Image (tube, rainbow, N blue to C red):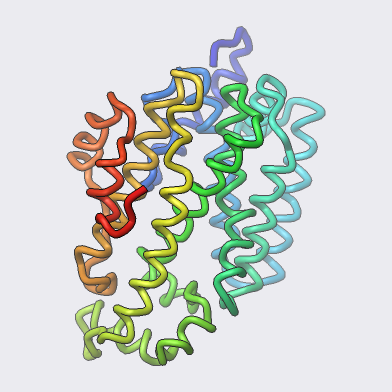
Length: 309
């Protein structure tokens, strides 16, 4: 973002540097958006990334204290220029684009939930969590490009919820190592899958003495992945209803998310041994597809003919 203020320029440069340090399956601060919005996305991303890191630190009270301080600094940066480069850039972004601070606050609520809650009783609990952890990101991206229409927000919420769910199914092994289980306990009971089963399959995925996932696991995953496809397909119209500068980024976001979901299916749902992860040439291939709208054919190839729109 262009500015005569050298401190502000340095703050955005630091946000870009921090954003590049982290790998994500879903592109952040992509070259597909204009430079000023790219800087704003980087500021939002590193704010959320740092808060997410707090939620993984040992000791619940310590995590909550860090997040409380992060919230205090968030609201302070909306009133005056901060010393910290992250909040200096973030405050400038909030003012320039009139971002809703409630969306950033909701992200912090999700991280506070991470510090307290390691299990979800049912699927509705996951959807509620996504309303705080994922949907605010999509809403802020829309705000950066001047969109506040309820119809577009609803499409965005569907895509963001789908991305969050995809991340849960992709990272079963990672979550287990943190003693987290994102699968609804109600669904696990329905398919007779226990926490001990997950741990045994997780050991097998680490190359240690364990057990290969069986049909109970595949049936559970098939149901959860099917639910996730429904959210992706409900959000599919979004990229072609926004301003031209944002269309390719949103197409790429949708395509990368559905690519991960397709790979989970292609691995016969064994994410313990074959965690899906996109590489640079995957992004290049999907990037080439962003030159045209996402078609019903793309959705059928990704989700299979049984989920045609």
